[in-house]
Length: 73
Image (cartoon, rainbow, N blue to C red; front, top):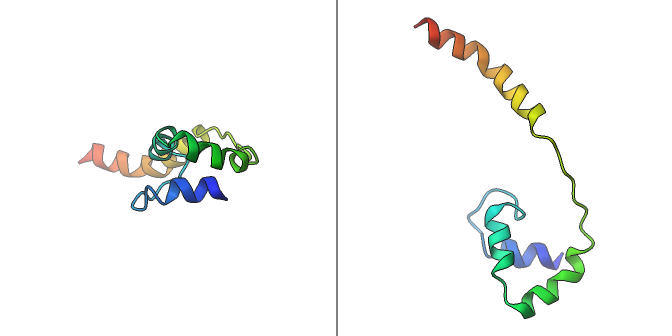
């Protein structure tokens, strides 16, 4: 997809997703011509909104035994 390549190539050393903060910064700093050229393919993108709390709960549950151990020391 043109929007993905246009953004990802400007943040080659970023390991996160192109739609993250660095990717958004790149997008909003594109020239008007570049933005117009990638908008048609960007309109076809599905947006998935997830609730990170379930991942945070799992992460905290996994670390709880380690935290208890540290508190004892």
